[in-house]
Structure formats: C-alpha cells, structure tokens
Amino acid sequence: MRCANCGENVDSTKSYCPHCGAKQENREKAVRERGRQKRFYWLVGVGLLLLCCIMVIHFTLLYRSDPERLVFQLETAVKEQNVKQFINLLKKDNPHLSWTEENAKRFLQYINEEADVHQMFAELGKQAHNPEGYHLFSPVTDRNGNDLFILAKGEKKFGIYQQYSIEVIPFRLLVSCNLDHVHVKIDQKEKTLSDANEKYKIGLFFPGTYKMTATYQSDYTTIRKNFTLDFSEAHKNELDYEAEMEASFISITSNVEEAELFVNGKPTGKTIHEIDSFGPIDENGSVTLHAEYQNKNGRIKTDEVTVSGADEEVDLEFNNMEIEALHWDKIVQDEESYYNSTIKWFMDDYLSKAVSSYNEGDFSIIEPYLDENGPIFKELQKYIQHVVSEGIKENLVDVQVTNCKWSDEGITILTQEEYDIYYNDGTAKKKKFTSEYLLKRVGDEYKIHSLINTTVLSSEDL
Image (cartoon, rainbow, N blue to C red; front, side, top):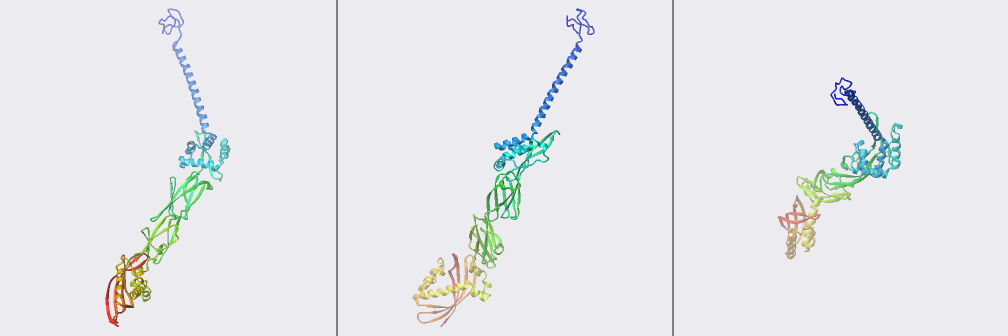
C-alpha cells in the first residue's frame, strides 16, 4: 500500500513508513468498518419505509372497512341522486340484481318518494357506528314497511379487517291475468301466464315504477295492453298484481248447431254446438264470423257478421230454403215435414200470386217474388200482357214440389203443377205441367230468377 503522508510504497505489515516515519493505518479494516456502517443505516431506512407502508396499508384497510364510511357514501348518493355512485356502491355486493342506469334511477326515485331518508340513514348510521354491538343487523324500510337495505358483515380480510357491505333487499313480483296464455314482458324479463287461475312469479325487482306489456295471441285475434306497475303498493316486499285485459267473449247461436264456425275466413274445426261462445276478442277490436254446413248434397254458409268487443251475442242464421235444399230427400220422406217446408210454402205462394197477377193483369202482384236481374222478370211482364189480350183466365188446382237441388248458383226446384185454364171462346182445359225453376239469393231472400223449362204432361177438356 502507499503511505498516506509521502506516497511511497510501504509494506502492509509495517506500522510506520520507512521513508518518512509516518504511522500507517490498516485501510482494509477501515473500509470494512465503513461498509458495515452503511449497511446498517440502509437496513434501518428500509425498515422504517416498510413500517410506514404497513401503517399506510393498515389505516387504508381500516378506512375502507369502516361501515360508517359506506353509509355516508350511500346517503350522499341517494340525496344527490348520483346514479353512478349508487351503482358502484351496491353492485358488487348485489350481483343477482339487474343493475342498469334506468333501474337505479327508479330505485333512487322510489327511496326519495316512499321512504323517510333522514330516519333511514340515521338508523343505518347507528348500526354502523357500533357494529359489534349487534348480533344481527336490522333492515331499514320504506313508509309501507317494505325492507330496502341491510348492513351485512362479510369475511375478515387477512383474518384481521372485518368487511362490511350494504345489501339491497329486492321486491318479488307476482302477476295474474283474467285470460289464459298471456305473455308478459317487463324490461328484459318475460313470462307466459298459462292459467288465468294461477299467480306467476316474474322475478326480483328494484322497487319503482315499471311498464308491463301483456299480449294475448291466437289464430284469430291479438290483444295487447300496457300496464303500470307501482311497487309502492307492495306489502312485505311483494307486489301481487292482477292484469285485467280488455277482452270479451261472444255467445254464438245458430239454427244449424252442427255447422262449423269460421273466424276471419279461417275454419276453427269446431261446431257451433262445441264452441257455444267465442273469444276472447279485443273490446276495442273486431272479428268477422260466419258458419258453414256441408253434407253429401252440398255446402252452405251464413252471411259474414263483423262483431266487436262490445257485442254480447251473435246469431249465425242459415237461410231456411238452403237448409231444406240440402235435406230435401229426408223432408219428402216425412209427409208432415214436406207440407210444412219453407220451399213448398214459397212455391205455393208464388204460383198462387202468379195466377192472380195473370187474371187481374197486374204485374205488381208477382213482382216481389222475382229477381229483377233474371230473365223471368221480363218474360212474365210479356206473358201477362198476352193472357190479358187473349182474355185467358187460370185457376191453380194443385202444386207438388218433386225435387230440390242446391248449388253455388242457387236453388233449382222441380214442380208438378195442375191448372184449369179458361179461354175467351168459352172453352176450358185441365192441364198438368212439370216445371224447373232457378231461385237466387237477393239480399236476405230467395227470388225466382228463371223458368228453366216447362213441359206439358197432360191436357184435358173441362
């Protein structure tokens, strides 16, 4: 090593410099000594820094674990209507609820309108100030006694710091309806209410005011109505709501109960007898009903009837002549039915009036029985002029309806008629004819459209 005084090289084992006589120190020992001192001070500094960090973390965890802080922050969010702060405080401890800004706004509005905010937070603050003094925390309620919040103990962080949270106590919603198979939707929650006699749990909700849409859908009608759900009407955190749909049922009658009911032109597959009443239909809407009946002789149907929800009953009436035309083979087997039939009565009346019209020369007598769009209308006008000019008089002796057929074109009637005919030269004859007539619907009635053909069966002098 070198002498610190003169700078000459000196043996490290020598205590004095041989050149200048200056005393020599052991530098390695000094260096080691100074190194130990530096490490000591560094360790002390690190220890103090760690202690400070531990103290900061300790007091931070104490602060964050303080239930009074939670209550204060929640109270501030509620009073200031701070939606984001409200969600941030409660969402992590209530993950099963639907946390949206809209739901949080509803909840905040409900709290400020339906609860004594000052009293509610005073009670929460009292519990938070001395949490160890409570075996069980008590929930705070709204003015109707429904539970809103409860202070809850969680786990101890690091086994030391007791954690607390404020839990929301949701409301249950039960809904029933006066109709079967109604689909309801509230926010993102949907449910089909299958039975009108049952109540259905829709789910858990924040208290507030909600819009519920209820829809009844069938092959024939759609009924939709919006309802407002107000959870201020809840009791023991449960709102039991009955949705009353504006719908009605219509009593249906017909003179042919075996006929099938059609709604808006679609077959129901059920007879009038099986249905008895139809519905539901929207009280503010309408549907079109008619009935159809078929047998081996053809198919007939009633006029279409448009009914609204204000109607209580509808009679789907078949035309009696059409019914008889389909059952003529059975009617003629029963003599009493034959003589009481509408078709025979109509033909008797028509031919009787026709003879009166000929004899009196008055077309107006027969005109109500005729289809003015049919060829017979003008033919009879000419025939009346002919018999009047010839001085011919007639007497109807007998009428028999021998056959009857129904088609989409109308009713074809075959008759056998017997007349006494008197001529202006004094002669008279008894004549029998077979005739075929076509009747067509004109409004609600059937009228003679045409005389298809007529044949003389016999002619005898009187």
